Image (cartoon, rainbow, N blue to C red; front, side, top):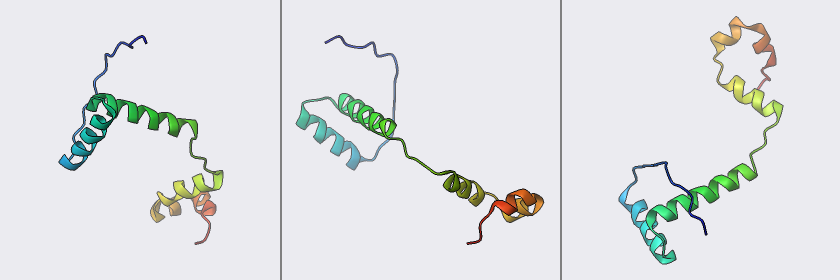
Length: 86
């Protein structure tokens, strides 16, 4: 197997419980902690990207309008008209 050139660094801070959990799991698989974390993160990233969450236009609009305060709504009647009564 050809090893890929590794030229990026990723650091994170974690609590001792999480560190111990990662160390124990990596050891059980015969991997270093770095290898374990990179593999697990890559697998999760690929899983998320393979099945991106879907959102409807109505849901997107509702989320957008949640962040708009009443002052902004009163200044823009068009936005106020888009808000559905709760």
